[in-house]
Image (tube, rainbow over all chains, first blue to last red; front, side):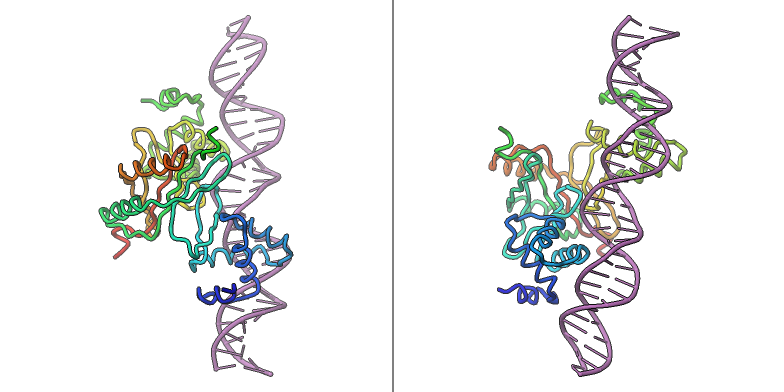
Length: 138
Length: 138
DNA sequence: ATATTATTTGAGACTGAGTCTCAAATATAC
DNA sequence: GTATATTTGAGACTCAGTCTCAAATAATAT
């Protein structure tokens, strides 16, 4: 699907800048990226999108469900493409920076249970485990 | 236990400033507080501790295990006193800001299992569920 | 005690991710 | 094509947090 149509299907007005940002993040080799990553990628590729618009657009995409905004405790947002990727949690290696995605159905169920028990209406959750990946323990 | 002795027992050199910060956070009515909260509390109480030292000290206490640094996705650190309080996770109400602590032993166990399965050595984790508390759903 | 050595502190400049402003540019509706 | 609504960009600004480095304080040795 073209980026323009993808934007439309997510109810986002299509503009040159938004198409550039979307094409950029889709073509990214890295699955996880910061706003600065996207900005410098676009700048390097001579795709002119301003700083304000890049940040704004990533936030918008995140709100509309095209991207997912993660909080890996770095002090700034990390994004991942949400299209065709179900919810999952993250292992974050503090040595090499690797991010390992994982899904544990049972954990999700227990979280729902914990919320119900306390009359809490969950809108979403973040589960991040930090430590050393297989390679960085050697 | 006096704050000076508490510091010593955590292997932290005692200074006037550190004692002020510790006494401050212990006497706090709020269980969860930001660095700015502590700074303005001390300033208001005429306990002179500089901005740099306040931030440094909270970071130090957190590293030494006196405090625990939470990441509630606010973009800055939130602390809680760790002494006499076992690890737990948090429900965060985005409407009223209330923080509800909870413990689910089983979730912890499943997390350990998920790490073992992937040869990941965990140093800690953050589980934060955001949504609406009982009162804020009305 | 006193001198020596090591650590901590404070004022204020600095950092860096992210936001705001507002006039100009662009997109959509009519 | 014109009117209306939205988006964009340059660059100033915000704000939590860090850095610097000389002065102050604490621990250690004598």
